[in-house]
Amino acid sequence: MDRPVTNALSPLLPLALVEVSYVAGGRTLIDRITVEIGPGPRTIILGPNGAGKSVLMRLAHGLLAPTGGIVRWNTPEAPGQPRRQAMVFQRPVMLRRSAIDNIRYALKLSHVPREEREERAWQALERVGLSALADRPARVLSGGEQQRLALARAWALKPEVLFLDEPTANLDPGACREVESIIAAIHAEGTKIVMTTHNLGQARRLADEVLFLYEGRLVERSAADQFFRKPASVEAEAFIQGELPWH
Ligand SMILES: Nc1ncnc2c1ncn2[C@@H]1O[C@H](COP(=O)(O)OP(=O)(O)OP(=O)(O)O)[C@@H](O)[C@H]1O
Image (cartoon, rainbow, N blue to C red; front, side, top):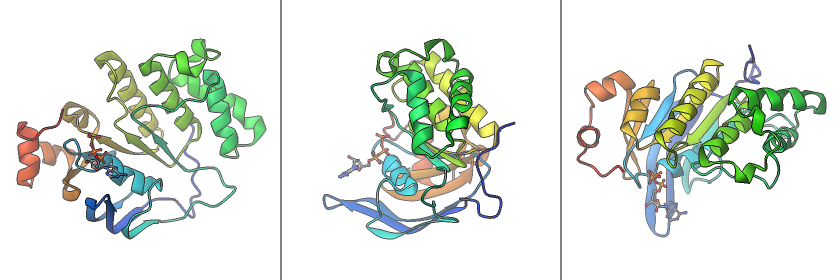
């Protein structure tokens, strides 16, 4: 079985956020969040629209720099080393190339040796059921196919941690289920999943633990069964009851 590329002596996780804030346009979008994210359980960042889920994930992945506090990985990414963290977005960003070339290119950028790239690219495409579309321009694929391709591209990198920002937000229920089963398979291979959603059904299906975000604050962190059975905060309780806007 393929294992994520992890140096056993210096794993990337845990990731620690210490008093992390993000202020933009005079608004505090993330408000002094302290949390440690370790390997293992699927962590779902849940909360209503505008709670700050995407901003928090971008801060964790390093796409945004916090305006306050610290984001600290157990081992920082080293230049020239294969990437051990990857991110998939709500709307996949595809290069103007074929499906398989999109994966090949990501492997090249991540310094995967040339002789390994072909096998890894084809294997990833196969796993998401897109082998037959390998030579089709990525940008003409359907929304669901593009998202599966984005997952294949991330999967091929064998990341230690995969961030997913509302990966099914624009998909119909069938495509949504396909993406969820791919995420489950990536997790089963040992990659840590950190995913945002505002979809309660999806959180119930995928979460092992929930970070509940509300107005930029981390209001609650609970095991998923506990969260859905008996949330600790009034905000989470209202969200679960459907009293907060979330669609
Ligand atoms: N760079 C920015 N500058 C100013 N405001 C921003 C910036 N990025 C995000 N915001 C605002 O911050 C708030 C949180 O945005 P974010 O995208 O993190 O929410 P979210 O919880 O992911 O919501 P959704 O479920 O709708 O995706 C929103 O009100 C958004 O408009």
